[in-house]
Image 1 (cartoon, rainbow, N blue to C red):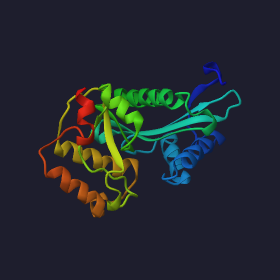
Image 2: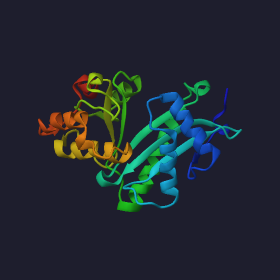
Image 3: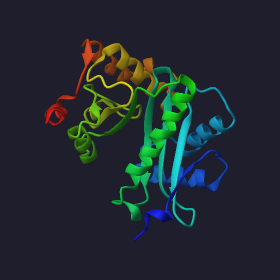
Image 4: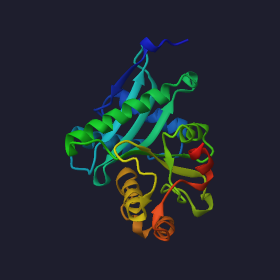
Length: 234
């Protein structure tokens, strides 16, 4: 059994290091449906060289005593909407079930929080992420009142309309604990995710993106996803 003391968290700040490639390849292998590793390495390079980007890319690795990546987490501070977005979280297969991902996600949140405080003098409104709709992790956190799944048909850029309902977009309140949000705020958030986090050049040219916008604009406020309302009130 691996002891907690044998693991340490590292902020990966240089795309030229072996750990950067190893961490992103772990993410790619574990999740599959991700951006190309070279594109993600470029995100790290942009931050290292101080390029303007609308929010920094955060890549963290939990490494073992041999310096190998045991887990990796990536996220972005969406500066335009003052929110953090968890893009990817992966744990090495031989170390799953040890809550490493949960711990690393906490470090990712603190890294994004520090950027928000540095740039805006305040915490981000939320930490946002996307997960499979049947995720036990999501159900547990909704039941504990820690996250709020958005009531919208969510798609990331590579999903077809036939995949509606496969993923849920959720937010973990940090500075903004409102249970419902005006639709126009959620529109801006989803646009920022597609445009900044996923580097989609023209989201408004996407039929799938416009479908999400139509559904959002059809209602004045966005509350809790109906599949999770019972859990949210328990």
